[in-house]
Structures are given as C-alpha cells and as structure tokens.
Amino acid sequence: MIPNFDEIDELHRKYAPSQEAYELVYRHCMIVASMVRELCRRQNNLFVQRCTLGEDMIRQYTTRIPPRLFNTDKAVVGALVHDIGTYSVIDNDGSNGEPVSFDRDRYILHGLAGYDLLKAEGVDEEIAEFCRNHTGVGITKKMVEEQHLPLPPANYTPKNLEQEVVMYADNFNSKSFPPKFVTAAKAISRCAKFGKENEDRMRELVGIYGEPRNLRELAEKYGQKIVDVKD
Figure: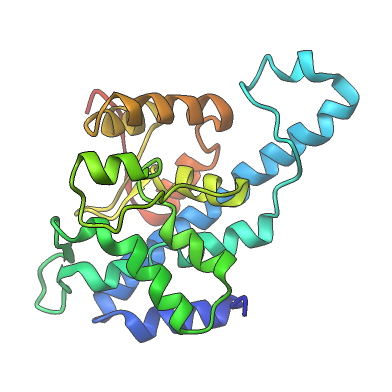
C-alpha cells in the first residue's frame, strides 16, 4: 500500500520513542517534502519548456533536462517517510529535557532500518526504497566494502528521479542540534568530508537541481538558521 498523509503521521507517532523525537524527525520530513515539491515543480517546468524553447536554451540554466515528468505526489510521500528509520538509532530521545541526539556509529543504518520497518507495515516497495536509498548522495557497494561500513554489501543509491530528488533535498536540512538549513555551497562542503567522490556527486546534483528556491521561506517558517560555507 501507499500510505496517505494521515497514515504517514500515524507511522511516525507509532515508532517515535518520544514526543520530542517525533517532532524533530517529522518536522524534518515535512521540510524535505516542501523542498521536494518545489524542486519537482521546477524540473517539470523544464521538461515542458524543452518542447517550446528547445534544449539549447534550457541548458543555459541546468546541466540536465529531465527525461520525463517527476511524479510529485510519489516524491512527496517518499520525503515524508524517508527518515522514519532514524527513530531506531536515537541515542537520547529528548524526554529528559536534553536535545534529541543520534548514535553516530549506528546512524548509517537508519535508511535500511526504515526500509525494513515500512515493508513490515505493508508499505509498497517503491515507497520503502525512499528510506533505503537516500543517505548522503547515495552509498555504493564499493563504498560499503572499501570503508567497511556496517551494511550488507549492496548499492544504496536512488533508482529513479523521485528517489534522487528526495535524497538531494535531504542535504539542505539538518536534524542536529540546533536544527538548521544549509546553502548549496555548505552542502557541497559537508559532502566533501566523506571524500571527493561524494563532493563531485553533490556538485553534479547542484548543477542539475540548483538550490531549493523556498529555502529561506522555510527557514523563516520554522525558525531555523541558514548556515553557509563561511559559517
């Protein structure tokens, strides 16, 4: 099944170990969903404009014209569930008055944990995969093996445009205390900490999608700071 918004909220409440954890994680998912909606709209406009303006004109603004329209509804659902596995890697759930924090060593497992959770709940594979394939800019089997990551050797990378745009948008909002937004430049610099391959991939994605245009609007709405590379 593909859960509706109420069912997604119920799943978050079911697995969150505390109200504080629910508010942090679900708020982040809603923020990512808002950015995903805006990014899909922009990409779909490019796809439509290609037919009237021509590819040469469109390529002045982006490095890739989408090969098809994005399924915005599916991408938004994926964004709303993508981090549901983080409840299983929480170190402190915030119920003691301290900030919610995550187990750094186990955090990389949250994508696969979310996938397994949703599958157990009867959620369709295509939706559960948003959890599995969104971490960072994607985790390849090669990375798992060479870096000895605590994951079964496999590719944990987006399989379609909808998964890709959720993975991308996720990089612009952090759940770390205090929660914050980051610019495209900061997102690239954060990816660079995990190697040049990750940095290059994020640069490529920024060239394709650009910075979410509603970044500042969302930062104001949720009262979160925007961190740039110089901060």
